[in-house]
Length: 189
Image (cartoon, rainbow, N blue to C red):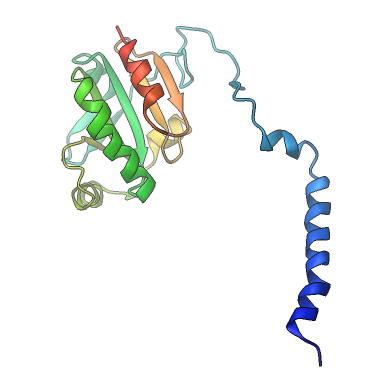
């Protein structure tokens, strides 16, 4: 009789062998396993309009969860900077937004912080998500058609800092622990 133990002994080496052949066929894969941390984005000319660090952000206007139109340069006219955090109401985003609320936002009262909801698709749905997740105290932009998401080539957790002149001074793909965000905000003029 053919036992499960025997089947595992026969199949496991084949699976392992197949996995190893796939990995060895992926040229340069080991480089991806140990990233350098270097910024591989192309350099940009300061003062040009674009969405990379060092460029001046294009203006935008989107609704918030109260249905009010919010424009980037309108917000910058009354603040020392704007922080956009791309949020999708998941546990990771909840942890990041909660950390930001408790440890970052209170220390920077002249900076405007916005959660950017790019997943719910409407003002009403975004407002409901904002309230049900306990973030009524953090202004939330409704990116219903993913205009900002596409503009900044964002993903979940993308955090962007724009200074009062409209320059993008920080853009990272994950909020992490807020340390870099705090350093950037402390350096804002």
